[in-house]
Length: 331
Image (cartoon, rainbow, N blue to C red; front, side):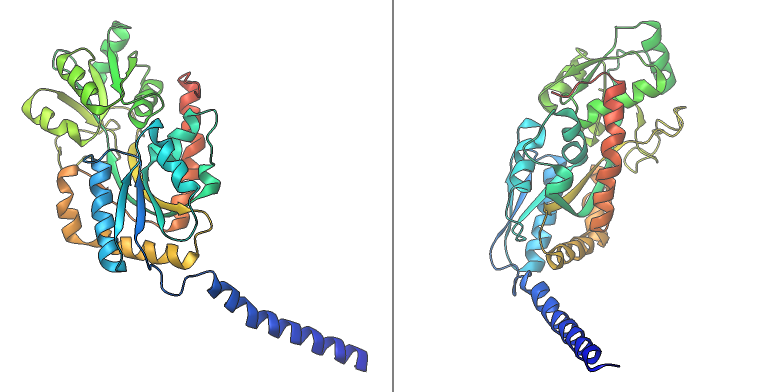
């Protein structure tokens, strides 16, 4: 080997050695020495007291206990979640801002708007999914249908006579009905509401006749004020074990539930994301947590950050198609 070649080899090896020595230092420099050192904010795009807020608060308390800093809930309602999501997407990626949101915010919102001041897939990074929960297909007792198939037949036989309530254009309980309609040919007219209270009041009064809604319908089903026809998930719920799923009722393969998860601004150090993921996983594995939320009929599910991101990527075009097929134009 020539002296020139030996010199070049030594130079390359020296350069590699320097790079190998520098990279770990650079990587470590991205992670705070003692995170967290101050309170953490958890943005929730739902009002206080609801199912999502209840689980978010329990998660925040667990994180606070384990991390040694307060995790403060910040309920940012409005614009179908866009206000909270934008605040999270534009926050500093330093581990001090979390977003606890649902597929309504991660998936449906981008499909229902012509534009948003942020990009969900680019500006937010998943930490973990937290829970999934089915919808219940319920009708006012004045509706003669007692099964899913009877409801479908009734809606076809008397088109335009049945109305369904939702909590807003492009929201989850709007799209689950649109998916149901596209799969069955049911003829049911959409009536959007601005909140659960008014929608449920009109459903109970018979002003609207049908709705896909969450666990808030269970007391009314048990009391007979509403008639439950089916649940929307892949299996029956513990709270209503005698109620069949939509799939069991003849709509093969039907499976749509709401799900919630935690995300952070993109660029948040991986070490922080990993610590958040493992800390929340500890909560989700706890039998005490499962017992605590049994009445909400939710299924606690964890995931890797990558699995949550992939779920959003997979579902976004799926529900874009549901909206197109239903003639729902982005606003």
